[in-house]
Image (cartoon, rainbow, N blue to C red; front, side, top):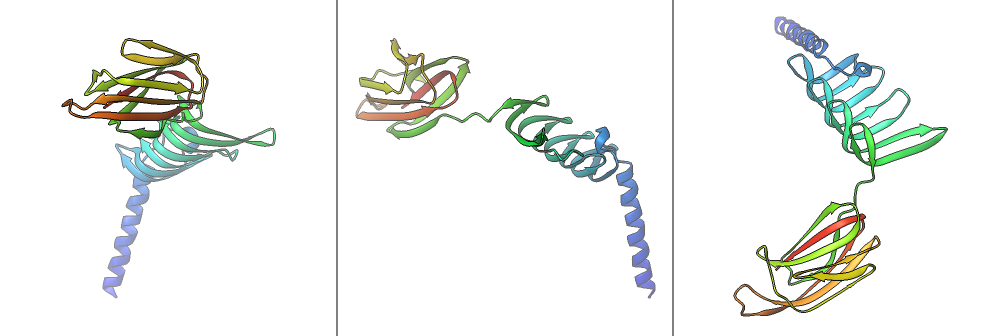
Length: 223
């Protein structure tokens, strides 16, 4: 009987200490202040946790603010699932809310609490033969693509080069090829021959790809 009573006392003390610890752990977003449970560091919500006030949030905290990935529910019923940075929406996330009786979904990239737009679709390699690697880089706004063929990072001489694309005006500049005035989505097929590093085998090489996101692009093909 004494053992049971002792265990009850220990459980009660532990519970009180936990409640006191949670009460002393602050959430710095006003509408989330109320009840908090989770990680704590230097008196502030830190790590995984759940906060409930006027609004509610479940996810990662840092120094008292939602930071990392988490789900925020406003008192209005609006919901955001995604990335946070010190209490504001940042990164990739989905925000669902109602406006004039209509449900609106903003799914994509956020920066400093503002919706930037849908997550960009990365360039897709449809087919490649005897190609070691490809590197697509969006260099800015525009509607062009420059294609460079290399071996170990050095420009490579090729034979029987052929290129065709869904749109644009073809151009060449030394060892670079490309198109200007292209439309998106943009598809392109390239075939050529080039030697291996020892210059002992002449390979037939082929690459077909698609780019959906508008912009000025640079493609490096390494053999």
